[in-house]
Length: 82
Image 1 (cartoon, rainbow, N blue to C red):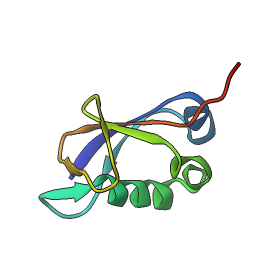
Image 2 (image 1 turned 180 degrees about the horizontal axis):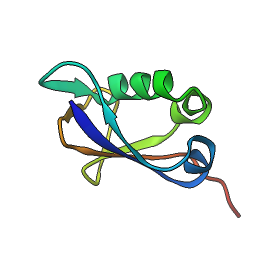
Image 3 (image 1 turned 90 degrees about the vertical axis):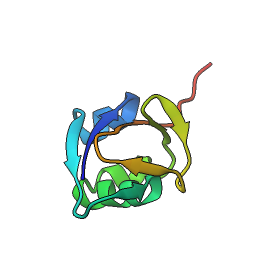
Image 4 (image 1 turned 30 degrees about the vertical axis):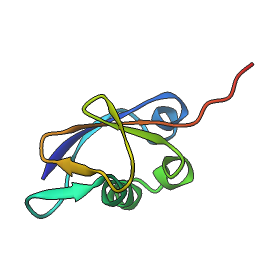
């Protein structure tokens, strides 16, 4: 299964540019499984990625939500400001 992963803010700075991600298997997976795969592929992701908000095809998603081949997955880390 192939996905396009978009990273934003400090997560993009930590991990690097957005990239395609390919996971073995066919059918569907979940946002949570995708997070785990990202952590294995990019160890720097583990520090910030677990807290990141996830959007699938521009709609906010939870870890239990499905991700299908060809989906665009965006990760936005928590931000602070004032």
